[in-house]
Image (cartoon, rainbow, N blue to C red; front, side, top):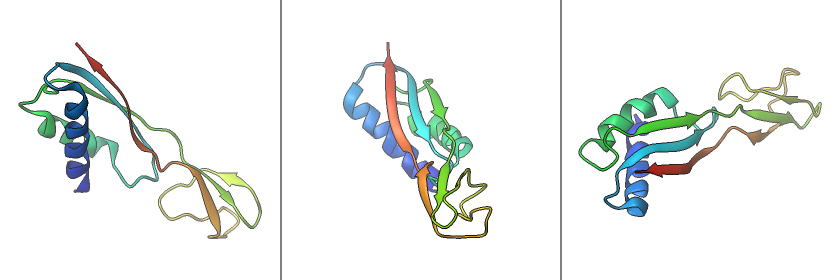
Length: 109
């Protein structure tokens, strides 16, 4: 479960910026092609933030859609999973969005 180490790094990054101030919310963006499961990240956030100024903070996850473009037929499509195949059958695709894994903002008291 790599979400735990990713979430621990997120908590550490927030603490580096906020110090001992109480954090109310952490806003992140997690794309469907990032390889990170938002539900697992939510669970891990409670564990990783326990006993810190982030304890009790809300983890708000924006889940933008993934988008790819086929280099053969030039159609844009939303990949159904991490196996990137165009509906035309081609595997020669370019990912346009969906790999996001970003800390967007932090709300402090």
